[in-house]
Amino acid sequence: MQGTGGGRKRGRWLARLLALHGMLSYLFLYAPIVILVIYSFNASRYASGAWRGFTLSWYARLFANEAIGDALRNTLIVAGTSTAISTVFGTMVALAMERYDFRGKLAFDALLYLPIIIPDIAMAVMLLLFFVLARVQLGLTTIIISHVAFNISFVAVVVRARLAYFDITLEEAAQDLYADEWQTFRRITLPLIMPGILGGALLAFTLSIDDFVITFFTAGPGSTTLPLRIYSMVKLGVTPEVNALSSMMLVASIGLVLLSLLLQKGGGGGGIEIA
Amino acid sequence: MMGRPRTRRETIRLLFLISPSLFWLLVFFLFPLLLVFAISFGQRGTYGGVRWTLTLENYVRFFDPLYLRILGRTFLLALTTTVLCLVIGYPLAYFIATRPARWRNVLVLLLMIPFWTNFLIRTYAWLLILRDQGLINTVWTGPLHELLVQIAAAAPLPIWEAALRATSHPLHLFGTDGAIIVGLVYGWLPDMVLPCYAAIERLDFSLVEAAQDLYADRLRSFTRVILPLTMPGIVAGSVLVFIPSLGAYVTPDLLGGAKSIMLGNVIYSQFMSARDYPFGAAISFILMAVMLIGTLVYFRMGAETE
Image (tube, rainbow over all chains, first blue to last red; front, side, top):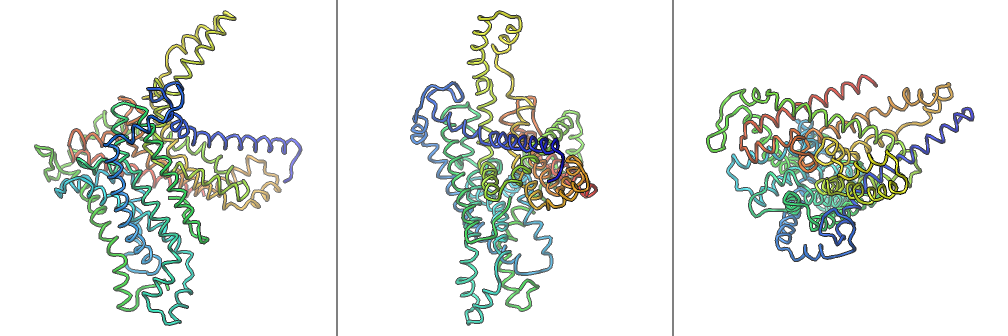
């Protein structure tokens, strides 16, 4: 780099300022999360009071709370079912979109991306109205249907990213060796795109566990999930139990995200950049 | 192998692959979307149902100063959030993009982790920090106040009195527009940084060196070379922040007070408490229209500066 001594000095200052800004930004992103987790171990009766010593009693209370057990069960049923359905459908549609041209493909592509872009409140309203007018009883089924509706798109994006790097000659080689189509798919295609499928499935699972707004609108009596439980607890009054429950959910979703990213990176090439 | 299906077999296979998703998206996404549009021209039934009519009443009703003010507030809050995210996010993206490759991946990963964790919980964390009995005020009226008391006792000066008065009450942070903006910026900052980062990382820095060889100073090589070349990232990031901010519900609900509501809260109350589905549907459509127009205008602006 050329320049006068003064210019170089200014450049160094600028670089330092940029580094400081970077560190402060990461502090901004992580401090609230860390503070929440620290509060969950605070012995104070108040959710955000001064430090009164370390305790695990808020966690112990959570495990004794039956309503939370029910919410956990509902969350896992919804996430498990919607992930299974959307992973199969999303993978199938990803294969079709990467392999074929067909009339209306552009429109279908747009339809496939729309659930990712549309704000969740709009999607929540649409689905609620649909279920109410179709006289469908709101409950776990309607939540699952709604989660599949947004998760198909996320799975499809992740699997397509993986397929974009797929070496098609491998399939041709298999067929030259007299493998039929099903054998080629099972022995060659599926194993090669498996990291993408698993990454997509974990992403869908995480999104389903974390979803609040759409679940809130499409839930009925007896189908409370963990985010809904947290919300109603917060609305009733902020307590240390909420801190403990929130911390556990944070740790669980951070674990799942890391696993998902790891799987997508695995086997080289073709992870997603962002949503 | 990319191409139109040539044989009957291939056509059947294509149909088999797309029909489940097509069915699901048509029935549980596109149809409900059209349904909301149709209902927005309907009327509220006696028991909260929908009477199918063709009236513009719901849209006319929205042009009440009350709702227009909320629309304006929502737009301004979303715009402020977008600008703040850009001001904070672009330098951060630049910082990450100019690190060595190994660091870059770690920093991007650290950016993505909070992005994928529960938005409700992340907003709740700010509630713990900002509320009257929250972290900031615990320090403000606690240790800070005591410290000032001691200083004032040691050196009685008139300035301490004002400071003592200020720290004897909690700061009013919670329930303000400021709290909503902090919550929104916190929630959507990664949405801005990731596309900006992708654009800056792709940038060919030899172009910047070329500009400097031609005696462009730092500012000019930034505004004339770096900024225009990374504009697609800025545009994408701004849209990704603006859209969810406009449709925010959780953030104003948890961090905003009674006076600082956004359009998302109005939609919520129309559906959940007032049970006026047609009016709620009309507001939802207005919200989507504002998003669409905002996004298009922004893309147009982005295209012109390129």
